[in-house]
Amino acid sequence: MTCPQGPVSKGWHGPYPTSSPTAAPLVVARFTKGQCQPWPVRARCATSRETARNVSFPPRELRNLQVRIRAEQQTPDWQARFAVRSGVKGTVNEFAHGHGMRRCRCREQPKAHL
Image (cartoon, rainbow, N blue to C red; front, side):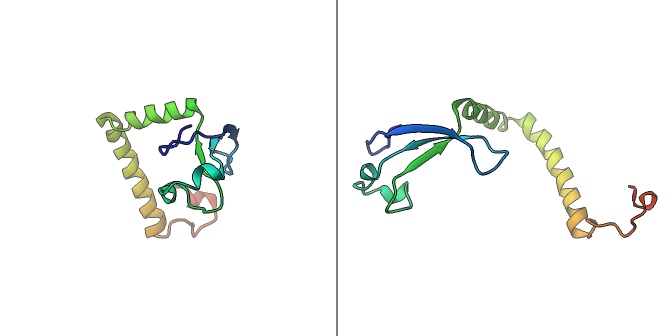
């Protein structure tokens, strides 16, 4: 990987598992401390003054899938289908949070059935 300022990363590592069990593993490109220190724009890409910059991104197959799905989400057909889902989720949220329907007053199955 090449930084916009010129240095080339010292290596690729991974894919590493993430802290979330449902998240995809990440590939990491690492720049050494010496590569990152002399640049005046360092504050735009690295938050720590002492450590080097690590850039994480998903594996190529997952990235290609993300690009394809995000392009599909821009189509009018997808947005129309999502509008229906959004309305349903809003209604359920209003029912649960706005009217306290998260809990049922009756514990008996016949009375609690909707």
